[in-house]
Amino acid sequence: MTFWLPVLFVVAVVVGARLARAARAHAELPAQLRARWGQPREIATELDDGAAEAWVERGTPSDAPVAGIDARTWDDLHLTRVLASIDHTETLLGAQLLYRRVRDGEAWADSPTLEPVASRCATDALAREQLGVVLASAGRGLGRGFWRLTTPDAIALQWWYTSFPLLTMAMLSAIAWTVFSDPRALLAVAGLAVLNMGVRAAATWQVPSLLTPIRQMTGVLATVERLVAIDALPAADRARIHATLAPLRPLRTIGRWVSRDATASNDLVASAWEYVNLLLLLDANALLFTGRRLRAHATALAGVATWIGEVDMARAVASLRAEPRAWCRPQWSERDQGAIVGAWHPLIPAPVANDVPLDARGGLVITGANMSGKSTYLRTAGVAAVLARSLDTCPATAWTGRILRVRSLIGRADDLASGRSYYMVEAEGVVALLQDAASAPPTLYLLDELLRGTNTVERIAAGEAVVRALAAPPGSTHGHTVLVATHDGELVALLHDQLAACHFRETIDADGMHFDHVRRDGPARTRTAMALLAVCGAPPALLHDARTRAAALDARAADGA
Image (cartoon, rainbow, N blue to C red; front, side):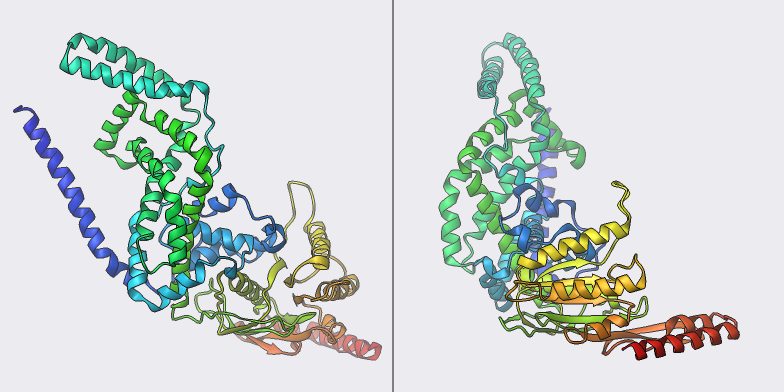
């Protein structure tokens, strides 16, 4: 007994210190949540690797290929970084549902849970604090790896797995026999220990990849139990989720059996638990009982996790709307005329806001020098349209018009894997857009220096034809909006009956070229190349010859017109 007193004292001190630290952190949480509310997040360089899990593991809705965002557009608009930079969620489940909604192009109104929760959080500080405490207490990692469990066949059960509970009971009986009856039974304990370790090793082909998801069940189900008790959430949602919980509660207990990661946590308790796990096959039993229950209740488990993620996402969107930056809720309309007022880009530290027309069967031809802001303008419009659709929240002063999906052809590069030049990649992309436009819902098409890899005459002729076909494809009843950035001023004149013109201006002085990134109406009128050559010290005679030739070409073009 004397030996155990110091051990018990050390254990009590360690446990007490942990409880005190946890209590202090919990007490400080509300103040931290209040401080974070409505504060812009730092511009991020990457998104948590786990944020795409719900989209990858759960698949996409049947209509996602039409409404969702294709890989080219996703990369063109840098949407991974955009989401990471506007993410106000408290859990990974919330970030996963945010990613999935945007990637699949789901409209905000498609989920009846979202706006009631967002509106309540916007106006009720106590409600958003209650929700925030529950979600933040669950931990940022809530949901990591979890979606692997949300299909009935997630765990492949072998017939011999039924021996796991029998071996566990045999081990407990042998230990009890050794302690209370016959110390010689220790031989039976040793024999069973070897057998159990062999059995666990035989099941390890599944165990390592499923341990994290099985652990997550405890946190997910504990969190949903706390959320359904919050009156601020819609009563119908709480009743629906509460009705599904009874058959899922055993999974919460099973999740506690699973061994802890002693290596990652450097935790003596976790190390001790691992030895207990080896002796009693806790991981293996968790695998068996989880697999059996998931065959009947995987869909309900997915529904519970989705609800948690949606509540977190809705609260996050309310916080996003509360930022001091200009975020607006769109005013949706079926009219052909529309516009974004004061659109700005979330990835630019000090963005310049510009207006964007969104008229059906029309759009803009955008001209200006390199680095003047043309490509950024395209991306700004695209990001605004994506977020307006999926989050009912837009980085702008106002949005009026139709719900638009987005397709783009901005960034291009050679496809080295298949041996195709960027020109071939672009041509295939153009044809794909044309095929898409014929039957697509209202779409915003973003084109940057279309067909830049070919000669001037073909580029201009094909560019005009492509833009007209995208804006008003044959057979379409609604038409689309096209924004095209170009250095070819001739496109402005050729498309003037269908697309308006705008430009970004530069100024050149002894220090070089400067841009204000403000969109102005009409085509660009400046000749940047010759001005830059002059600043850099090109010979005056060369500049004179170039200006003379430019004037002659302008006169020839005017005569041809």
